[in-house]
Image 1 (cartoon, rainbow, N blue to C red):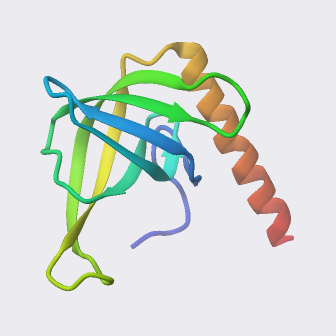
Image 2: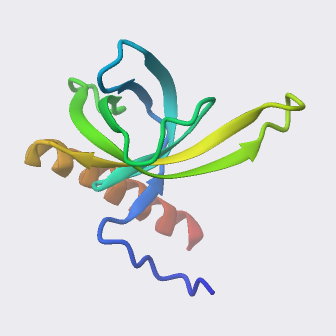
Length: 125
């Protein structure tokens, strides 16, 4: 049972930013937005199963008016869900861990997450 303590090494925050995902060894790209983000990775909802442990190349566009973050990632979990708006189709709740990310880019993400969490705590008071 969840007790309200985030046990992740890198806390996550609900944060919608544009992202481009490219499956390695293919030219196919997926453009979507993140569901949540942390310094260790992201969660996205997409219309295809990328495959567990699949390597991907990522471009993240944070809302901080700075250049996009380019890094590699690995799909670490996938949950197939029924698409409520389209009977018979599915969406894939997908967790991607960042790899090959520059320390300064990880720090940018951490700063964004911390700001979101701080503002969330202030709004609860």
